[in-house]
Length: 352
Ligand code: NAD
Image 1 (cartoon, rainbow, N blue to C red):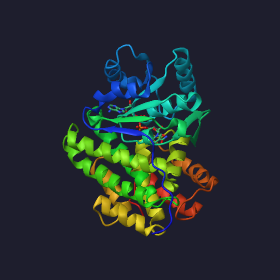
Image 2: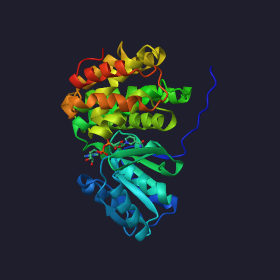
Image 3: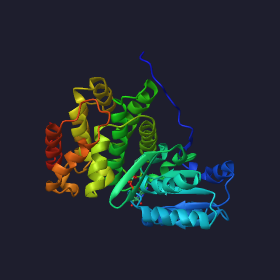
Image 4: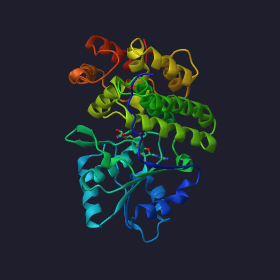
């Protein structure tokens, strides 16, 4: 056994169908009295129904969460939290909503209770991101890690099938890169493998019936594991590319992960054979990159960057940005090889 360092996440996880019933008790445990409820405009109804469980303990429902946490939105939410003397943020939604909670917590230290409704995994990480002037800055700070996460699969029943598929693949991308992280460890690798297995196994039953509760539970359990991996170890080329493409060309987060993952894994495959074998085993396939490509295609997700809005003339810039900072990756970054990778991803060719 090689030497390793493992730091366990201090978040409290409350998991299971109807676990949202525990919300009042969880707020009580935190000693909080006035929750600022956060959501996107289209999850207002879901957030309201959850707020209704907390009579007299909701300061406001702020329904302006948006992808990539625009600084203007973060400033409005921060001001509101301080004006209303909120003593916790209750984020009901996906990565965008949890991200808004983190932007508030970063300045104020306000405790976050996260109620995730996608598989993005932000609730399991101390990573925040805020976009200002078209540039998304990310960082790590223990203050932004939610204190409590309530994973209730019933709240994910309404997640549309297309986002279910891409969000689950987004989750699996965290685990896949976690398996070859330079700062990985055996515990996180167990979580990663199990996370991929659970997310992948949930997709066929969810395609047949998006309201299949056991399959929703399996996906959410997998998403928690994969998010924990993201929070614990460093990500490599895949996350860097997705961050660059998503931020610079305003591509949808989960979809861009779905398109890029097979190609990023093929790029790294020869330098990370053990990780590839574990991913393939978890997917139940012979080849990890091809396994993800087929998974996306079988379940109707877009497999080309073109199909999700990437301009063909942006590839040069994307390569330059991807190699502009050095970061740990199993295979050294090479502009020519990255350009080939992105050309294939643009056209939706199988991982080469
Ligand atoms: P999202 O939060 O933007 O949600 C996408 C859309 O789906 C929104 O309109 C949302 O309201 C809707 N939605 C969510 N759950 C639903 C449900 N159950 N039923 C119906 N509609 C629902 O998308 P996302 O993919 O969850 O998050 C993406 C964002 O999160 C990106 O900005 C990404 O950078 C960030 N993120 C951050 C981290 C981190 O650790 N900091 C990790 C993962 C993602």
